[in-house]
Amino acid sequence: MTLGMYLINSRLCKRRIGARLRMRCGARPNSPCGLKQWPAPHRILSPSPQKIGRLHSAINSTCKAGRMTAVFIDRDGTMGGGYDMEFPWMYAPYPGTREAFALLNSNGFFPIIFTNQSCIARGKDNGYDFAAEFREIGAYDWFICPHDAGDGCNCRKPKTGLLEQAQAKYGLDLSSCFVIGDRWSDMLAGGLCGCRLILVMTGRGQESLGIDRARWGGYSPDWVAPDILDAARWICRHKDNNTKPA
Ligand SMILES: [Zn+2]
Image (cartoon, rainbow, N blue to C red; front, side):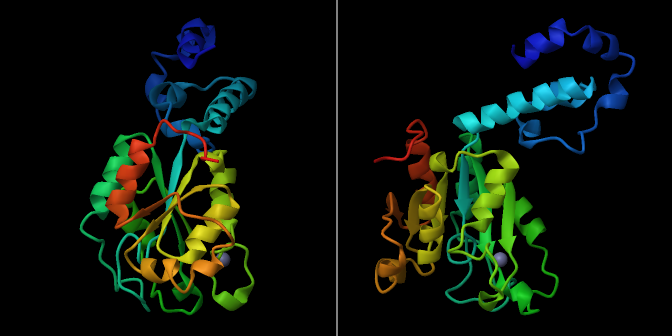
């Protein structure tokens, strides 16, 4: 049953929509990934926990069915910045970055930033507001590794922890998702998770194809793009090809 039919058929909803509607327009604090995909009806429902559970499982199965395709995007060297940045504010987006996010969003993709920020572990971030930056550029969500190389965490790329956190949060099918990055560590993390890989030639792209090519763990790029905007355009051209090529 679709959500629309559910609403029409539900006596509970008929009774509650109306006088109490205004009280029920706030987003539920425990809403799953689908809140933004099922906007108004989801916010006005306030039925039993069993009905909420059925609604959430319908949304999650939609995500698992591949409706939510995430594009994981590295920050430094991919979205902007310099070759080797010591501080997070030594950064400006490349000319095409904003358009790339807009293009992905308008084509139904979910651009999610995944980034190593060891500056946090080294105390060099000075409280930099990554969330404000990422929200402003048009990211749907972001996952940050705050550790340093010696911390032994499982989220610093090329480890797969950041992708796994996103997978767990949104019920993603990672084999239908994309990774855009400039470093071998982006390619290896994405490759280990079965994502489609797009290397950009900004940042450290050249050395990823050169001296760092042996560190990719045997994975190959699905596309090598001059920059993030070209990468976004390539993804949009392949939006109907929802499985990783053999
Ligand atoms: Zn980490």
